[in-house]
Length: 496
Image (tube, rainbow, N blue to C red):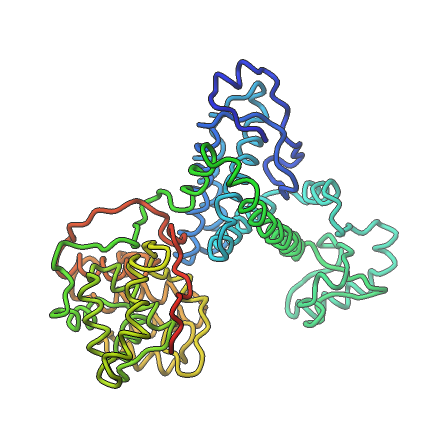
């Protein structure tokens, strides 16, 4: 893929090569970039349109959309953004496929740079791929697998006849109470190591290293293979980006690509101190914690007050959150020092812990403003013995969550709703339900009227809007659940 300076350059060259053929519409494994010349403005526009689709998928997943609802949402997003013909090509019939391929590879560059970015991109792309694959007819799915040389082969009539009785036995064992015969679905022969879960649950027939899998499981197999290949490709791209591409394109493509992961779509940059001057101070911090902190932050805040100490990752989680809601560096230093010096000399705090506070505010080290942890980063953390950070809805037992929510004065109905979301592993939905329950008396939080929580700092701001009215803030738009410009590192001062 060659990026030219403008559309005029593309028209002047007039030598556009066709994109990599996609026999099944835009469905692709993205094995290689398209062979095409793309204007610089089209390069960015295509990526932003795909980013809108991926963000829409994320929002649908956060709402707990059912499979049919998710399929409908993806189709609508694709029609709105990825079907528009706005690239400079000579063959408009292939433009949809070209835009899909270009936008994927541009975002692959943008989201390969950190583990958190890669995880976000991989999740949304797999959902998009699965929805597209499921829309294909049976023979189209077979053709796609044949063209891409996937090791999943439909049974020929003679092979099927030889194992028909065995397949009937499998279906009777796995579809108790349902009327089904082997002839009611297509069957595929796949390597048994690709279906360990089905083998473990005895839902397939095994013979000579092959598993016979019904049509209903093929989509999951193909998506799994797509995920594996894309994950490896992202790791390779990350190495190439840092060592070759970014330095070579420093003046042209690098600024565009690096900005994409922090762009747009109604999100907020929490790396800067926010809120009107004086809104968050040491004087009102305890009150704000009890009324407007999410449970993950209430927990570490309360433990700090109780223990007068937090281990490294607890300090990072709470410290960056406090910075994001508007606590100044001076107040933050006074806050941490006042708590820690209740169990240690001030000299020890100054020597071992003050650097970490200044570092979070961009005053030490690389002097970079770090972004408060997103819900996804907190959910994926792994607190150990003696740690208090992490997501309570993921890392706590039901009884502990119930006790904590009761202290937040949630009704029994609200507590049960939160626990239902927790048990279903919809941790952000559980937090959103807790927000609705905690603010039930503030107005604006009906059964479905509350905000969808994607970030602890978003929880705080939405809470203050309901309690005090909208905050006077300014922000640089970002993708809410997409990691921000600078993901906070583990930190240079790892004192415990």
